[in-house]
Image 1 (cartoon, helix red, strand yellow):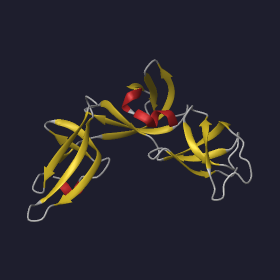
Image 2 (cartoon, helix red, strand yellow; image 1 turned 180 degrees about the vertical axis):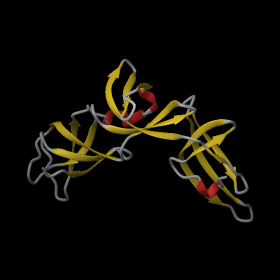
Image 3 (cartoon, one colour; image 1 turned 45 degrees about the horizontal axis):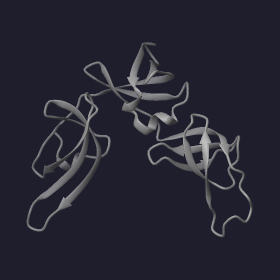
Length: 187
């Protein structure tokens, strides 16, 4: 059993008989009252997101999810096709399940697919990925006094803000959770 202190981003629980994952959380302690945990949960089956507040005494069962290493193959309509790395079985998952993270997937990328009752419910992509810059404006020396940034389009179509020294053809590392530039990768 899990308590409210165990509720962190990414933790999967059973709530009202359905598997949910914690999207965000905030712990609050009010004067004389007990502590509460304000959470944003995503139902892994219906994909709906809602806010719920738990009291300090609430307990939860951990959702029995299994992870399988898989490779991203290709997009198909509004779905994404993945292949299990061991059994070579293919899974089709709606692209809206990944949300903004889908724009960082390139063919052949290794991901983890979470299963509940042998049914794929969500995909975990790596926190940091390396992508090629395909389009950006040239940076001009002396543009700013304290560094600056410019938009860059990556090989997957995603757009991130990068420092002025990044140019077309550079391989950069991007944080997929915060949608931010991390560093230029030296080849």
